[in-house]
Length: 488
Image 1 (cartoon, helix red, strand yellow):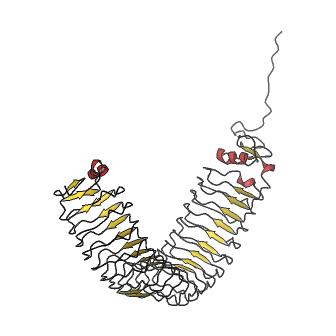
Image 2 (cartoon, helix red, strand yellow; image 1 turned 135 degrees about the horizontal axis):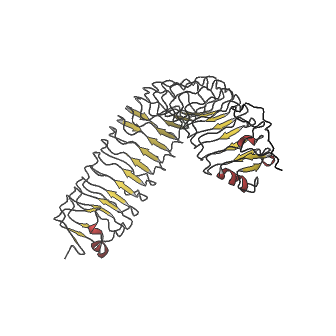
Image 3 (cartoon, helix red, strand yellow; image 1 turned 180 degrees about the horizontal axis):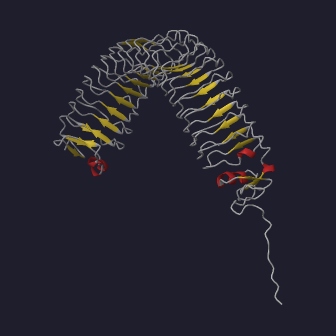
């Protein structure tokens, strides 16, 4: 006998309604574990001893008490899982490939460094304990730090930030917001600020009158037409180049050590009160005079491309380098500068140049002046001499044994002895009155330009004859020949 059974379902739902499980489960959730989908993230956790198997999961109990975590420069693309590092106070994830970063659950963070990633957004509103935030070199357009009133250091340079409000950050001491798109910046509430780096923005105004603690101000490459630093007596470093300043008063900044104000519209600059000045960069302005004598700490001076007819550089015992080219100088007072190693005074109207006491001189570039005489007999440390385009009829380099560069083109020199210059590598002597030239002892010579001279023969050695004379860096007149013996 056949028995038939009818099986009746027990689902009372309408057959048209989709079935849903009673307790939906996250497909990546595993009880007691934290999901870590980025292999490079997990590999570093394994290396640090917080995990042992590369399987996209790590025991939560092994990470939730970690205080500091450095995940820098590991090609990490995703930091999912960081939310379970509950007590994290310091996170460094610099130099990765992160396009997003969620630290909303890391409420104990005091230090976050996520520079050099691809972040377009960063929410730190839940991280109210943050004292140091560094998010430079990302793609941020906005950054809200209004909830982070414990912030001491903020570094957000090299982004695309168009506005930045730091009025709720009264403890701020260092602010780096350079290379963004800021049109305004209000630091009036940040009275503890000592470092402000806001260069390469679009600022047309900057009020730092309330920032009496400021020691470092870098606001170059903006659109500033004025800058008042009279209240900033603690300033040691001022960089305001590449703006539109027509005047700059630094008389109250007696602690100033570094001043860079190049590429403005300055017609005068008084640094008499700045006795601690070590570096002065005031090139590319409209200065007509400059007095920097008796600056015992001055090491570097660049005042090139102005309209200077006079500059007194005397009695600067620490001075190492002077750049004063492209001015209208007829005289250059550089006596009593025993440490001076570099002088670049080309393209002026110098008729004389006294460098006898400069025994540390290594480089002298004085081309395109009106020099009729140049005495380098006391400059035995000289390695590079460029005195082209003057009115020299002779040049004695017998006391300059370590010369490796010698340029004296476009003068009236009739003879030159370089036989005792074994280190000489570059010789440029075209457009003179040379009737003979012997380079056979100059085995290191790789550049020779001697055209436009009444030379019939250039004496060389066998190696030069075999190889060097065919070099593109050796040039002469077609009527001049090379020979092993020009006297035969």
